[in-house]
Amino acid sequence: MLWVGGAVWVLVVALLLIALFRQRGEEPLEALSLTAQQSLGARAWIIGGGIVMPVVVLLGLIILTVGALRLMAATTPSDEVVIEVIGHQWWWEVRYLNQNVITANELHLPVGQPLEIKLTSVDVIHSFWVPELHGKFDLIPGRTNRFVLQADQPGEYRGQCAEFCGLQHAKMAILVVAQAPEDFMAWLDQQAQPAPQPTEPAALAGRQIFLESACRECHTIRGVSASNGAGPDLTHLAGRRTLAAGTRLNTPEHLAEWISAPQAVKPGNLMPETSLTPEELSSLLAYLESLK
Image (cartoon, rainbow, N blue to C red; front, top):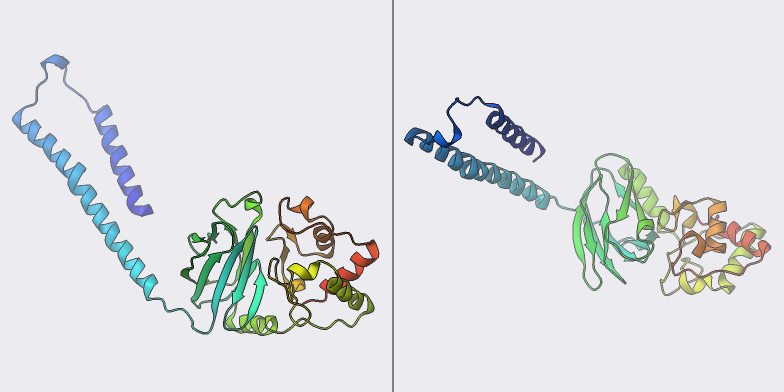
């Protein structure tokens, strides 16, 4: 479409310049009249340029588009790995349905393999958009949209919610990580494991703080606690690259900031303020940082 559109643009500009700068005779304008031959030539330009050329160009583009869509439809996704992406205000829940793996704000893919992605939302309409990999697809409450996603090169691709969904719409990013198939399977196997058991005293104390605080009411740590799923699954939190859907890098300092003052980091999100002492916060951080 780029090349065809460019060629049409060049042709139109060339004809426009010819019409503007071609030499006319000295005959006054009121004395000009179209001869039969000139009239026939004008009609030929109108029919050729206004009817025939657009029909040919658009028909060619339709044929190319239908061929491309048939190739896309013929892509058979893997039955082994099916991914469900659920939109929340303002974060992404990612589920690998056949492996019982749940993570947040990161979607891992094996390079060169098409995977089926199921999209839905629990609150308002969101839109999944990773510009380097695919066009945007909407996540609609009560409905499931499906498409096939494939990454041909390893790397990290930033995605974004492309449908205005509220106050923190701009801070609802998702990271797509494309890995070699063997690395992807190793990651998937690791993510399927329950949370590692802490051994350090500070981490042990932090686990107890988690279990006794309001954190467990919204967050799940598999093997430790279950919740209603209002917040992201934290089973392997320490292995993620970002916090709060791409708002902060996942560092101990940013995690402490997010726990202590989530409304300052991302105003309007559903995570409430916490009232931990510095010692309790330090222990909780030690535990969360062990969840790899």
